[in-house]
Image 1 (cartoon, rainbow, N blue to C red):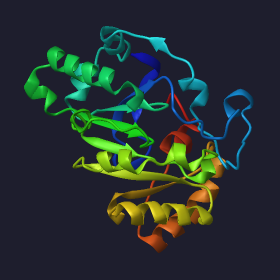
Image 2: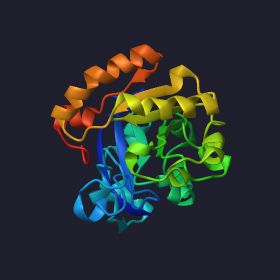
Image 3: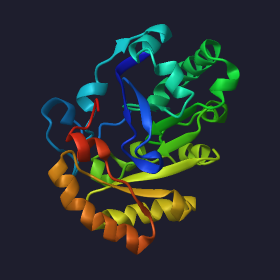
Length: 248
């Protein structure tokens, strides 16, 4: 697989926030949140109010064998993933690599006793725009779906795919994470939730913030929005604790 970075930390977002997790960030994405050209200048374009905070990482990648990935996670990796630690596949857009990910999971089954693998927990982060076979999705314990709003600077037909979202929602365990930068974003969020009939307890709102000051300032406002709509609030622990967006 083409790996941009891998590290051991805690899950910083969503329903499993705070759980020790191994992150495998894969290279490439089919979106460019922040608008066309943001990867070159770091500026915002096309009406974007935030930019992907991992662009500088996922635009690069090193091809690694499955053995190298396991080795680079450290000596305790196989032990930890069968004793409470999660594996989180992220990007970019990891569904671009879904077949290789599936092969990697099967390889792990060969490395670890099958009974122990039952205790493992795999998470997938996705923007929900790629239609994939449900057989691949069912290999995961949790699907974290993050549809992009117009505040991402991406055109609607690239960032919203109801067919792809419908397939992901057939999984038993999924959540939606929406990056919100202003109250007006809730019109778009509400439409997606209404159209797809997403239960409230599967909806998380997350601040559009790439540093600790912005995160703290907007979190107070976003919590009030969550209370108003009865949605769940997600912080970003990587920013809150380390004031970083990748590698921690």
